[in-house]
Image (cartoon, rainbow, N blue to C red; front, side, top):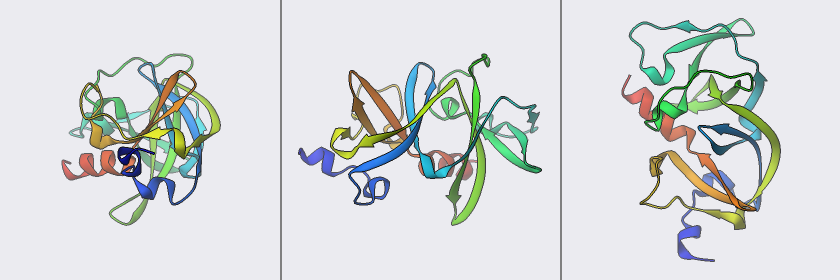
Amino acid sequence: MSEAVRKMPEELWGGREELEVLTFDIAGEMFALEAFIVQEILDLLPETSVPGAKAFVGAVINFRGKVIPLADIRLAFGMEATKPTIDSRIIVIEIEIDDEPVLAGIRTDKVHEVTTLLRTAGEPPPSVGMRWRPDFIDCLVKRGTEFIIVPNLQAIFSAQHAHA
């Protein structure tokens, strides 16, 4: 195994050889989130814009009586926002920000499946030639002829939170 692969984030794999993930599309790219952080997959809900908020989390939704931020991670990656389609979904996740569990929704273009990714198929993101910020990506996992992007939600949400 190459030295670069050994530098993949250990906290992501935690010594495991497999990672159970939920796969989804954003802007024609396949992404994956660890399945255990996913609380629910929702059809699109009415959104309330938050005046003065960063575009990344410019709206909130009502999730089971709680108001939670709705994030568009394509904006964190410097991409254009897009209009929702019939396949668009919201993935509600729970992550820790500043040692506090936080619920947040993530806009997606389409949700695919829960599947297993193999550690041996993972690679760190290349430092050049990517349209994504490398510090926002934990790793790329090759499956067949495609790469699945495992975003670093801690880095994405922390960076956005720090600039709020």
